[in-house]
Structure formats: C-alpha cells, structure tokens
Image (cartoon, rainbow, N blue to C red; front, top):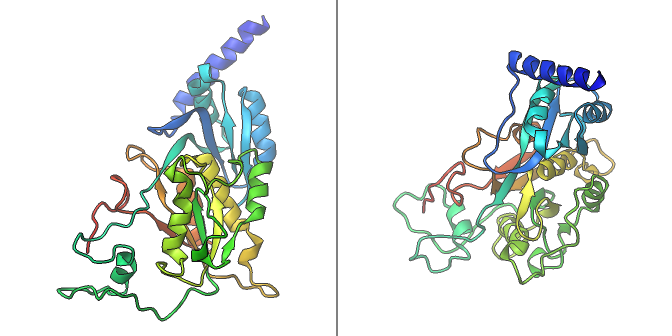
Length: 313
C-alpha cells in the first residue's frame, strides 16, 4: 500500500509541475545529474536545501548565501530529469538550471601580422582609442598604475612568485578554505605543470591585466580567485561559489574605514553558445556590478560565441 501511495504522489507531483509550467534551464554541456537552484527572496538557503534534498533523493553539493540564496544538488541519474521538474514546481524555488561546463578562452595575444612587437600590441592599442588612419606608435603611455585596485582573476590559478607580479598577488587563502569547506577544491596549485597549457592560463591572463612589462594596470593587486582545475575545467557550481566569495571578501574593505578598494573581476571563459544564458551566474555578475559597484570584464573575440567575435586593429 505504501509503495502504491508513493507512486501516486510521484505521478501527481509530476503532472502538477507540468500544469504549473515548471521548466529547467538546459545546457549544451553539463555535469549529468547536477543542478543549481535559486530560491525565492526570503527563503532560507541551508535548511530549505537539505529539506528538498531529502524529499527528492538528492545530495547537496554546496549552498549559496545572500544576496542570492540557493544551492547545488546532485540527483540520481536514472530519474534526475523528472526529479528536477518536480523541484522546479516547488513554490520556494525561483528557478533551476543544469550545472553547465565552462570553457577557458584563448589567452594568446593576437595582433596584426605586420605589428613588430605582439607582446605589446594589446596595451599599445588601448592607449590610442581614436586611432583613425594613424599608426600604432609601438609604446604604451598611461597616467595611472592601478595602485590600490584589486583585480580578481577567476581562472586556473595565478603563480604568486612570478617576476611579472613583483609580490602583488593575493593568494586568497580565505577562498581556498571556503572551497575546501564546500567540497569544491581543485587541489594543489598547478601553474608549474608542463603537461597541459591550461595550467598556466590564469598566470597568463593576470600578466595581461597587471604584469610589470606587458600589463595594463602595473601596480594593481592580483587576487587569485581560482575556479578552474589544471586542465581548464570548471562548472557553474564552482564559478558561482567564487563569485559569492568575492562579494564576501573582507580584504575588499579598506582597513579602518567604511570604504572599499576599487575592484575588477576578470572572467576569461564562456559557457556554450547554445544556452540562453546561465541565469544564476548572470545573477551573481549583475549583483557584483549593480549592488557592489565591482566592474566585471569578460573575454570577447577569442571564443566563437563570446560577446564579440571581431578583433579590430
């Protein structure tokens, strides 16, 4: 009798989710059986997450706090799609999406073939905004150094002792502990690996942002906001947790004041072009920009479906 009742409850809840028009945002590339749930305003994240995990046979991967409470869950593979639809119909759930896999953008600097020094092209181009018919002058002129600015490099890790950074790398031990506590750590640093070029991707990106020879802001502090492993793999669950930590990072606040250091978040990756947009990640980015006045920079031009696919001289 209990088995029949359970089956009836499942069928009723499935049809109820359909009647309510509950949907699950799909990703072209995703981690099977894993979903990210955003809760409605005022719903407590932790207690609700574990309650729903018990109801829907799931395992909590991590939870997210204010201002965007929610959680990531791993559902049984055989019934994950049906369970996800039922979860979407819960009145406390604002939205649910598959845990999408992210792709690192190419960090190679590509300029016009006739340009004599490709290592300098990117900074030479940005200091001549209105180039018109003039030629680049093979130099980089700047009035500010970025001193006092924190640049969060959300990537595969930054080598802190690299000569380009002159000791300006914050290894963000609070973030590493946060990821360990959440069961999301990618393990030991991997920037010295010779087996995979993606292991040095974060260091390369950081050098473009703030390196002493070829960087834009040559005195800025680089924060190693690692989200990717040594092979260039990450997913929305990891990335969202890093973005949450950036908001909470106590070192953004200027000591002894109520003011905050100017901050920039660099995202040199993209999700699949076939997705309508990873809405939870977009929500964290919107919060960074609109609530906390943190500038966010995204890769463009070096992934076919990134915001811009045209490189101009």
